[in-house]
Amino acid sequence: NQHKYYLGKKLFLITLSTNNDYRITFCSDQEKAYPLIVNNPGIVVKATSPKGPEWFKITNKSELDEKLLKNIIKNSAKFIEDQEAEKIRAIEEEKARKNEKKEAEKARARAAREAEKEAERAATLAALLAVPPMAEYADHTEAFDQAAYDADKKAEADAAYKIQEEEQR
Image 1 (cartoon, helix red, strand yellow):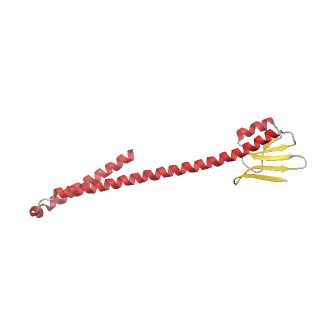
Image 2: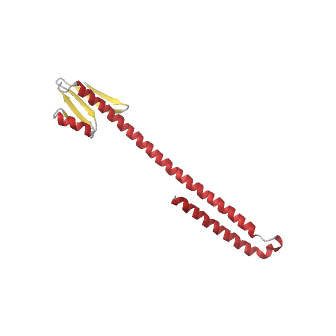
Image 3: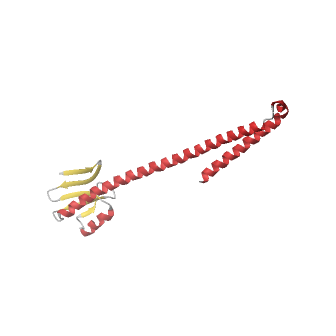
């Protein structure tokens, strides 16, 4: 007569009743199970099925007291709950890390766009200030082109400097 016990969808306890004894297969961390193995040699052993480092087996011929068995069952359920909580915590940490990375990328892109807009404004202002009066315009096209070129170069240098400052922060 075998019974399997689940916590959520995770198996944490298997009980088996035979004509001669009762067998309980439970999961626990090794630190809590080894004292049981040492104190009850031959009764508490490492389980071969189901496989895994957290599974242990008790063969009880009415030698263990009820209090100890209840404690083992409670610890087995708590072990599974702790495993699930650890998985959830790891998933949440991963999500938070990804969100931080995404926000940092957005901030860098935003700073680059702002630097680009500022460079365009500076270039436009420099070009407007460099424009000679209309009567003299025909004679100064080369000077106007040079001023616009210089303003563009300065704006690019300023944008690159701002991006470099953002990355150093």
